[in-house]
Image (cartoon, rainbow, N blue to C red; front, side):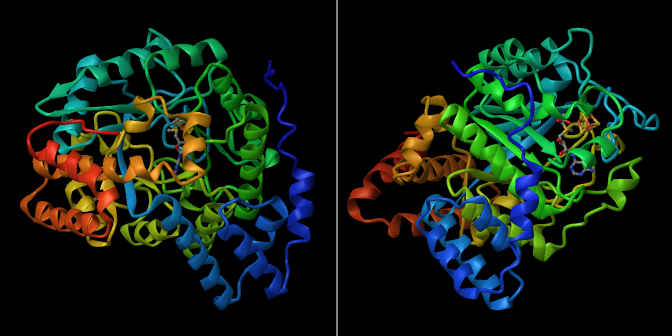
Length: 466
Ligand code: SAM
Ligand code: SF4
């Protein structure tokens, strides 16, 4: 039986420093060898990732981006999965210097949505066409304690409106013990997400100055406890801007490899938020290690090469431009039409209770139209997790490329469902054109399944997936 490690020894700062110290290579031949290896979709080692971080030559940078695009295309095709965050509460006992929800921010209005308010928010999201929600909360719960989150998930799944409902709830809440993780799994969540923020211990200590979150080890071992509790889709991430991004992506790799070693499967997703301005936070205004747009694209591309089968999530923190550029480099999931304050969908006035400022303010319909115009297929698919294709079972299908036989038709059927039930006339026209193009690009055999599924959706059936 695998034991929960009590320490964070698998994040080995000495090894990271050593890899970065030897990274700066001017040997273009060596860098091209690494890019060629990455094209085989087998991932990369720490030393190779470190070497790629040193690329500055424009030609090599172009080759790095082209490699990331080729990998994204081979594994994820043109699909982009859409979701909306749902902030249920901004109560928090921690004091993370970068976050508007931190306990010491006494100017923030505190609010935890009650059942009726959660239901209202979910109705609004369902009426926009959303099928996937990421539930987010600060680390302090109303009277029921953690049961508040469990009840909130039950409420979200209970909402049915017309043809719509939320079919997958992912969760981003503070680290739990194994028994609480079991209870969380029992509610039928999809992915449990938690970002380490920074893997650099000294920086971690300096920016987490109050509350339970000060405990680096408790946080970095959270995914071990989640896995032991049977949650095999987990999402990890870094809040970029707190420390050197090169260090952070190597540490992220160590975390991935540790989960693979201990549980036979790495994380389902990676997230890479950059620090955004937040009400009442000085360091969010002026990040100690700002990541430039070019470095951000570089880090997304490098992660795509390093862990090709792990989904990568981009939130509405980023501007439409950066989002567009990084879709091509490997992003597979995006949020759209987001609000980051509890009650923010029902009531715009609550925006001053938001966690941080958004970079993309467009509606879901606008984002979908834009994504489709750019050549991607927006997807609301929730098939895998509902058919039990999670954790290692998912990776077993993903690695030989078989998962595409499910993802592509599911993307088309859920996209059509969106267009028919929620799309504006303009988006519907664009979307129908994209669907026709996708079908035309398939040979007769692989076309029959999506064609059949699309026919069923047009005939009025909903939630058609394989
Ligand atoms: N309270 C839980 C926690 O801290 O893990 C979960 C919710 S917290 C609101 C979700 C994430 O928001 C954090 O993990 C952090 O990475 C991100 N975040 C906080 N402040 C941010 C800021 N100013 N800009 C961008 N992302 C931020
Ligand atoms: Fe609380 Fe999470 Fe914000 Fe930290 S990041 S202050 S734990 S909500």
